[in-house]
Image (cartoon, rainbow over all chains, first blue to last red; front, side, top):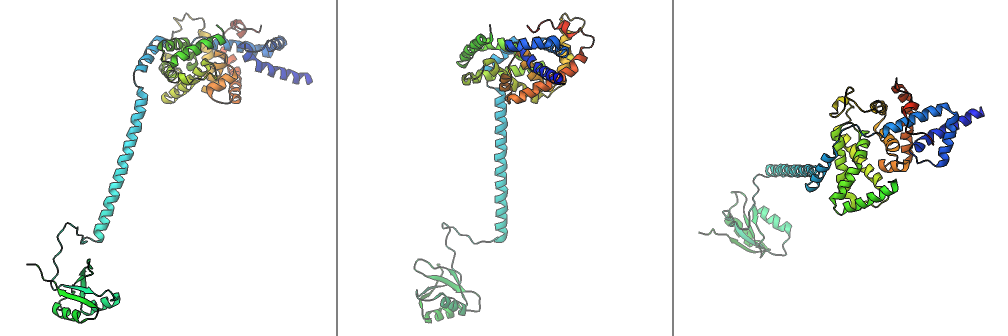
Length: 211
Length: 197
């Protein structure tokens, strides 16, 4: 039994050593040992013979015809030309970048469009006016009013409500408001008199349209 | 010329290549073409793919020659580049099954004057049972004569992985090659090249 185990170990050792003995990179000691083992182990001898044949077959030159001269000529031509593969991959990368940018622009355009539609539908007649545009004409019956600085907002609102007036614009640089009747029931003349009589109103003058 | 002398020559050539010397590149190309051709034939059997992989290999060598620091032999370095180019070509062109009829320059049996034809066929059928990585390891060890460490550098994997691939490849070949030999002469009679000295 012991002999059998030793034999297996030797065969395993021989198996490991065969490639390196065949390619002549094994040590002299390994070669001698393998030679001794093969002398009395038929199984390893057969295996080594097959390994030798394998080595012989592997060392044969390639049977696939590839012309070295033609290959070298094309390689030298390639050195002079930009690498088409690199160019192609660069073009592919550029193409993807362009597509990504176009997609981003389209998404932005869609978003801006949707936002515009939403704002327009929410307040379609927003009275925007730029500084370069001429001032809007004062509504009929408009009065320019300068309340006292000490007048509270509640008093001011109560006064306008009582006279059925609404603020059209203001205050301007000197604190003047433009107010006008909110309905036809109240007359500008009556409102003007009441304003002048009210405590806390420093100035109340009708706005006369420029002829 | 032994391996050491050959590597010294290769290093000189590669240094000249790094300086843009095309004549040195041509010498390297011609010196390695046959070796790389056989090596890549273990990866694919298509001549055009092998040709493309060799071209790519030397194109990279031309560009990277200056970055070779001599950590390995030039042959190991080049084989590593060729291996990766071969795998890349394999990915691009697919792993077409080998078909003898596809080889334009292949000699037919009637006109074959090569005494090694039977040996080639026997080997081809055996290697056909192996994976690409196993074929490459067998080629590098038995065909080129690289050490396990060299093969690990070429294939960019641990030595243990190389050992495992070689072991499994040898086991497969041991199981199939005798049957494939058929009525060929006994291995002892045919393998007249190598014997333990």
